[in-house]
Image (cartoon, rainbow, N blue to C red; front, side, top):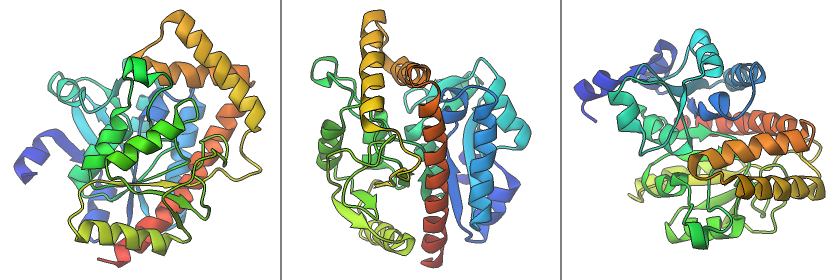
Amino acid sequence: MDREIFEKYVDVLPEVEEALASGKAVVALESTIISHGMPYPRNVETAKNVEDIIREEGAVPATIGIIGGRIKIGLTGDELEFMGRQEDILKVSRRDLPVVVSKKMNGATTVATTMICAAMGGIKVFVTGGIGGVHKGAQETFDISADLTELANTDVAVVCAGVKSILDIGLTLEYLETQGVPVLAYKTGEFPAFYTAKSGFMADYRIDSPADMAGVMKAKWDLGLKGGLVLGNPVPEDLGMDEAVINEAISKALKEAEELGVKGKETTPFLLSRIKDITGGDSLDSNIELVYNNARVGARIALEFAKLG
């Protein structure tokens, strides 16, 4: 992107700008998890803790959001608070981005939009909780997350705890295969299912170290293979949910969503909120811990990738 155009729409936090200019490791973070994924004040506390973890590992965090139509690559403490408390924060995917920017609105970036903005700034590693995917019943509704097509087109590696288990994991992996997106799993052969380490589906390849992952990223983009990569990092066994408990909660939440006619971009926030209520908050605790775990791994990968030049 032309520098003049970039500066017309984008603000880069000085800490992030300095890191990028000097070739330091930078890790992108989304803001939908702050504005739409968790209740206040745990959302802001979690966001700040994730940033602290990345700094402790030696990398620089860059939480991405949109404030007053300005794309922010890196948020201040006050801006994180704003994203967590303000009520008019829109959930922004690729289709929403030009409207929200031109109308000078406030927006929280999804996985897809965080990837877009990270790529604008030259950030190659992005840490999130779980990616979107193919929704259950998509053969009738065609409800497929824009995260998947973004992964096919945008050169950013996404570290996550797998596909959110409210989705059809098998069809999601099939879709990613069709789009040519490498699906990898960290220190395991099985692709994780967000709240649990087990999904019953295998990843394409196993990755055993941050340096291993950085090497795959380098080779992919050196070869001119457009698009991102997905690294499924399973939630630690002692921090995950009991499979039977979480599956029952998901089934109840899906049934409620169908009965209430919840559709589109409102589906995931609704389901996650209901699952939290059904599990008495245990799912939220697990969600937070898996994000922390992803932050540690993502920072280490960013550090290894920075060494490769």
